Each structure stands twice: as structure tokens, then as C-alpha cells.
Length: 300
Ligand code: TXA
Ligand code: MG
Image (tube, rainbow, N blue to C red):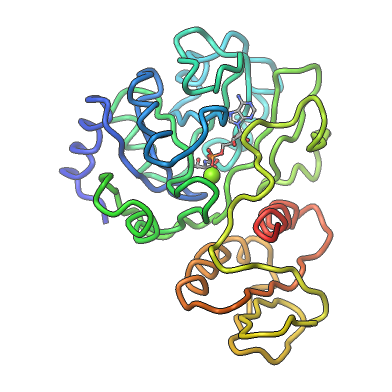
């Protein structure tokens, strides 16, 4: 899917301060050299993203992560040991080499080691950490394929095609910058066996950039219960209760599988032009928290 020539071209672009869209196991990222403030500004311009929304920095080793932070507490070692490479972002106090553009002026930086081989190879070949938000225009649906990225940006950015993202929704974000671990954004790592407090949206620890309406298709999206559908030409996304609609999509009952299909399903239904996308509410269960969070935001 990605040739060595494409990879080295992409790495050269990163080193030259250009942008590259690349696959990760969660969603596709729009990347730039995280240590180059001018390059990072290009990400915000291309996405139309407000500069108040911090970016996640992608690394290919714990050593690279440690080079960006002033402390690496035992909890960071434990979580990275368990979940990296993987869909977990750790927020830690930053060193000054990380430009303010990356962190939206915060004194912390969000870091993760992605599990996709192409992402790891790109970081390795570029030899620098790569700052990357999801490769979509601001507030729109995140890309699960290279085609979704091209639909959003056309020829404006070089895209490495590493196939469909398999986790399917964005990483879990945990802050380790305070006295205890704090969940800033739920994802598919649910910490079923670890004490992690959840940040209240209105609370002092709220994660900047967690805009209420986010991750949205253009088509209106509503959450429904028990197949109670709104009027109109409705596309119905269900996992448990079948109902009659103009179009129905049966999702997996397993949350991992469900998440991996979610954005592709929404992109497809969005292209088809229904009046409403009605999504059967997922279970109120920790394993589904990331999915429920994205659907709730999309339905606002
Ligand atoms: O899975 C993912 O995390 C994907 C892939 C590309 O890695 N990236 C992603 O980036 O979802 P983005 O920009 O769409 O979301 C980053 C979010 C921010 O909106 C913010 O909520 C949180 O991560 N974040 C990043 N740095 C932070 C910091 N220093 N403090 C608090 N929250 C931070
Ligand atoms: Mg995003």
C-alpha cells in the first residue's frame, strides 16, 4: 500500500516543513514536524482549526516522548508500557522545545505512540516527532480512509494510504499533569481496571478543543431509542432494534467492531444525501463510552 519511495518522499516533506496526511490505527492524521512552529501553523490554516485547540504529538518511542516533557511519572511509564503503541494520548508538562503553536499556549503536551506501522515508519524516517490532528476540516467527520482525506482536502496535501483505520475513533486522552490521572476524552481504551477520574466538560480541567459540536457529518444526526425514527427520508444505523427506514445499516454488537465501522458508515450515509441519520443509542457502558461521546457530539 505504501512504497519505500512514498515513505521517504513523505519523510522529506515533513523535514522540509510541509504537511503529510498519514494513517494511524485510530483515524488519519494531518502531520507536520512538531518542533517547527511555522510548519505546525500550516496545519491550523489548512484545517480551519482555531489556534486554541492543542495538537497531539506522535512519537515512535518512549525516549522520543521523554524528550518532549519535563517529567515522566511512574503512571506514564505504566500506561505507556501497557498501551503503547496504541490509541492512548498522555498529557504531560512540556519542555520549551515544543512550540506554543502545538499546545495552544498550554504548558502541557499531548503525546502518543500510534500502532500503525506506516505512522511509526514515517516518524522514524523523518527523525522528528509529528504533530497531527485528525485529517478533516474543523468540526467535520474524522477520516477513516485515505479517500476521506482526499475528499476533505483534494490535492492540497500529500496522503500516505495505509488502508482503513482499524480502531476507528480517536485516541483516549488522559492527563497525567495533575495529582491524579484525569480522563479528558474517552476512546476505545476504557480503563476498566485503573482508577482514572473523568473531567467534567465545564470543570477546571476541561480539555481545550473538545468543542461541543464536533465529529459531525453534514447530514443532521439524531440519536434514537428502540427504533423510534423521526419523519423524512431517514437512514437508520442500528445494532439492536430493527426498524423500517429508507435505508438501514446494521452495525456490530461488539464495541470494537462497531467503532471500527462508525466513521466509514457515517461518511457513506453523508454522501448519499438523506434528510436525517438516526443512530440507535449505544449501551450505557464503559466499553462504549468513546463511541457514545462521538455520537453525542455529532448529534448536537
Ligand atoms: O487518535 C487520535 O488522537 C488522532 C490521531 C491522528 O492520532 N488525533 C486526534 O487529534 O484526534 P485531534 O486534534 O482531533 O484531537 C486532539 C485533542 C484536542 O482536541 C484536545 O482535546 C486533546 O487532544 N489535547 C491535546 N493536547 C492537549 C493538552 N496539552 N491538554 C489537554 N488536551 C489536549
Ligand atoms: Mg479531530
